[in-house]
Image (cartoon, rainbow, N blue to C red; front, side, top):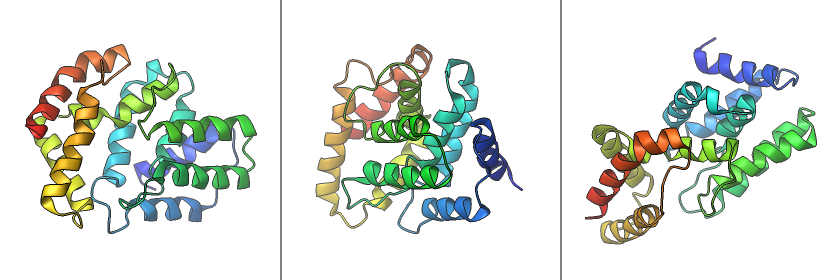
Length: 203
């Protein structure tokens, strides 16, 4: 059993839930390995988990955040505008089938919906999850450049001029925020570099 599999089963144990059937993890990982994905992949999952582990002292309900990360990109199709809603539906279905209590299901799905990055997340664990999901914006230049290439590949069907215009709009929206990262630790660590990365990309 590899590290990712061990994490999956530990998450369910930490939440006091019965161990899921092995097929459930296989189905979820198959989603993250779909051929049309380049960024929203197992690599992204592993990067999120690595940062979550580092920030464990900031988490109130660590395993709840962990489960939200597992499912937050369960559905990802670049042509869709409801990926977060669809991902939340997958989580809701799987958790309900496993007998998870309603408050846990609602907490996880609310976190997943927040990863649409359309509204200000509530303070606490959701805020931490959102900062982890956006940490790529403040990555070292080489990783950020790789990320941009991965996003372009996911949108390879979009003509270059249109892609650059739409991509700039998305990134400018982040630049327009008073702060990209809301947890003080990640704001201190990543805010300045994220803004440099974004400015260089939209220039």
